[in-house]
Structures are given as structure tokens and as C-alpha cells.
Length: 221
Image (cartoon, rainbow, N blue to C red; front, side):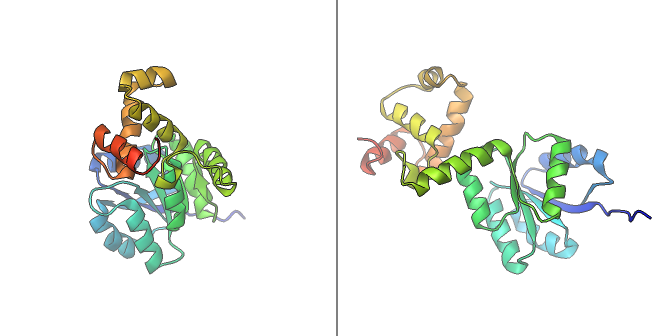
């Protein structure tokens, strides 16, 4: 006799209701494997909703207004060390991955993931495994190995990835976004996205501040 397997019960946390509704629509076709039992728009409501519903997994955005998803994960794990939290993000940045793992997350996936792969990864986590986007896992392993060997690139200690370090060097040299995109064979929007991450990590708001910090901190000379 085959014992019926209960679907994985999840709560969705994001500061955009449209994203939550999109995820619910994505997962609706997999109701025998995954069921959304609740949702919280913003980090402020997340803890009480999750405490009330006690889901198997919390699927949480990384960056939200106010408290971040990382703060939510840390707080949930402090309340219940067995709580499984999977971060879902648009940020293909291994530094976010490292931060998520440090606060006890059970996974880090990108919002570009397909619905069937998302369900599969959630099932992995439910079984006690860690779910990490494959492309990010490979880069993170390389980063960790380089850091272990003390092979630092400029800006590594400030949390910059190798690509961000490369882009910052071009900014210091005075290149425009278009020129940087041409050199790296990437889109201008991708350059802008990297620059936003660089500004955040350096604690500045624009190119001038980034250049000043890079020179002051000795990232580039």
C-alpha cells in the first residue's frame, strides 16, 4: 500500500503583492506537491504570519523595504532553529548567497527559476537538503577557494564580486556605462545593475562617491 505524501506547505514573503500573486499562479499547477498556505507583504508582518501558520518552508525575498529578507531569516531561525527559509532573489550575487547561508537560510534561488524547478528545489529543502542556484553555486565555490588561498581581487574585502571590481575599475578610469558595456560585452542595464550593487556595498549614492571611496580605501590607485 502506498502512503500518500502530503504537499510541502509554504508561506510567501515579498514586499510586492504582484510578485506574491505571480508565485502563487506559478505554483498552482503543482498543488499535489506544494501548497501556499499563507503570505506576507513586507517583512513587518512576516514573523506573526509564519508563527501562526507554521509552514514547512518560508520562501522569502532578499531585499525588501525596512527589514531585509536576511533579517527575517535570522529572526525566524532565532525563534525556531529548525525553520527552513529559502531566499528568492533577482540578485545573482554570491555575496548575498554567503550572507543568506550565514544567517541560516536553507537555500538561495533566483526569481528567473522555472516553476517546475522551483517545486523540485523546495522538495529538496523539505527533505533536509540545501538548494542553491547551480550557476551561483559554481561561482561561490570558486570565490571561496580564492579567498581561502588569499587570492583577493580589488574590493573583495568590501564585498565586491570580481565582476563588480572590474566595473569599478572602469568607472575609476572614467568610462561611461556604454563604454563599459562594450568592453565587457554586456548590456547597459546590466552595467547599471552592477553599479547599484557597488554603490550599496560601498555606502555611496553615485559614481563620484564610488570613485572617491575606491581611491580613499586603496581599492585602486
